[in-house]
Every structure is written in structure tokens, then in C-alpha cells.
Length: 199
Image (cartoon, rainbow, N blue to C red; front, top):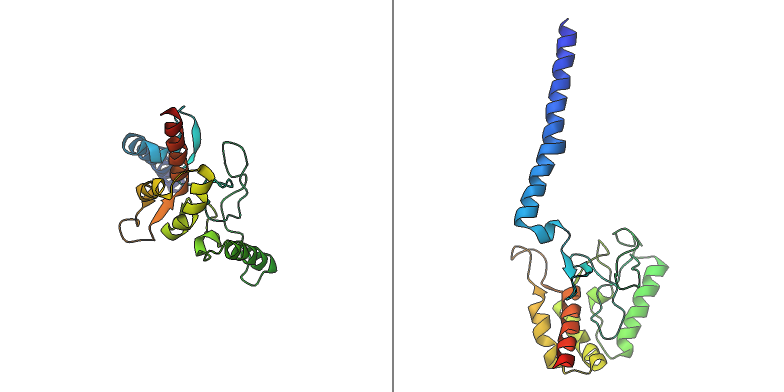
């Protein structure tokens, strides 16, 4: 008789724990997130002036045009459509430092910088751990100003304020390094160009 009572008691405990951890707690967190941080809770999706999603400010995008600032190299392959979304999962390439494929890719990128008489910048050569880092360093952004200004036919001084505007500081003021959010910066450049054409 006591075994049956203990079994029923155990099932009740399991049911209560399941209700708390699988239903009540997730719903509570969902409500808090949607009411206090709706943008972040929904993936930090950035919309254009037509209210269409153009990407997430939390995920690196595959910009290849000379008119845009380029982000970090990624092991993830991005689709080349307007909605530049990754076609793979996040993660690094997992290539060892001695892997010939990794060395070849790095040497090729270094050579491209040297051909342009520019000092190679680490975050434009090496991938991030996640493969989806949306930021580049201030140094990497500054190195691309001349190319972007020439491609867009504008002055470099028109770009510098935008770089400063979209420079995110250290997390909690302590962790990591300041970085420029590439999606925000590139979209601001597009808006700036639209405004110039309208005026």
C-alpha cells in the first residue's frame, strides 16, 4: 500500500515540477521579454523604410559589394539574395591551425591586403568563434572607409560620423572590445544615399 502512495506522490511531484519548469517559467520569461525587451526577444530584426526585415543586428551578414563595409570572414555560407540569411548553422570552421586549407585562405586574404598597400587587420582575416559575429573593430572599419567612399562617390568625412554612431561599446563596460555593427552602418549609408538623391 505504501509503495502505491509513494508512486502517486512521486508522479504528483513530477507533474508540479513539469508545470513549473516547462510551462509556467517559460511563459513568465516570454511575457517579461515581450513587455520589457520586445526587439531583443524577437531576434533584434532590423526593418528598412518599407517595414521589411533586412537582417538581425545580432548576426553577421554576407556583404560583398565594394559599396558596403565587409564583416568578418565566416565558415557559414550566406545566401546572396536581399535577405542575407545564413544557409548553415552557426559555428567556426573547426580547421586546426596547421590545416593547409585554413593557411591558404588566410595567406590569400593577407595577400589581398598587401596588394592594396594595407596592413592586414585580424578581424578581417580570422573568423569568429560563432562564425556569425555582426561587429568589426574600429580599426577594421577605418581601413575600409576609403574603398566605400570611392565606391559611393562620397567624402570619407561623410562616413566617419556614422561609424562613431554605430560603434557598440564593451559589454557592461568591461567585457570584450568596442565594435562597429556592420548591418546598421551599411543600412545608414544606404539611407544617407537615398536622402542625398531626394534633396
